[in-house]
Image 1 (cartoon, rainbow, N blue to C red):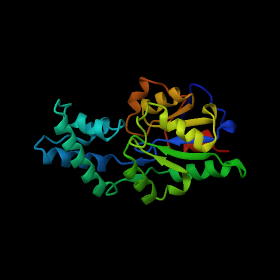
Image 2 (image 1 turned 120 degrees about the vertical axis):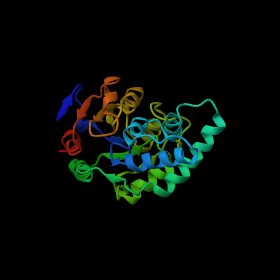
Image 3 (image 1 turned 90 degrees about the vertical axis):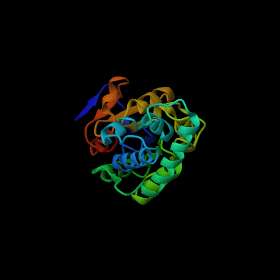
Image 4 (image 1 turned 180 degrees about the vertical axis):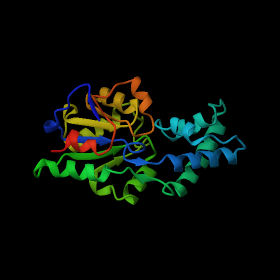
Length: 230
């Protein structure tokens, strides 16, 4: 189902910026396994996968901090983060997959512009190296002219710095841009950048949309083609 809070003039859209985790790919299990490997290494109780999933969205440092219970020892948090990143680097593609319907939706969007296709990019709060590796390994690379991560800029979403770089690279204005994501962070990012927002209910954190309502909310990935396609 598509719910519209504010219509998006799709014929004017020149740039689509996608979140990665919970929007294009389901990476919950690999992230949860990596967090629990870190917790096991440091002698901490393991966490249920659904709890870890609720901590995803603000980048790896915050994921690790939340999983540890927000300790005051910054050196400890840094050591835990380093272990997590090393483990995740090796296991990021064990179970991660592209959501059903995503590639078909991207194909439909790409084919709908009669020779002047909308440009598409990824802006994740996940570190850029695993973000790009996942996009390439899962055959999504051809859809996106750019993939940026949470450490590509001096700040992460919801700061609009990454969006502003993508706007310049794509030659697009904020009002010609939409951000697609699975949490309120993406909605706030869009608002901060002056862009439109689309929330996906199938991702990790749809409950957070009560904090910030997207312009359009969809329940299934194939509905992206209806929002932005022909």
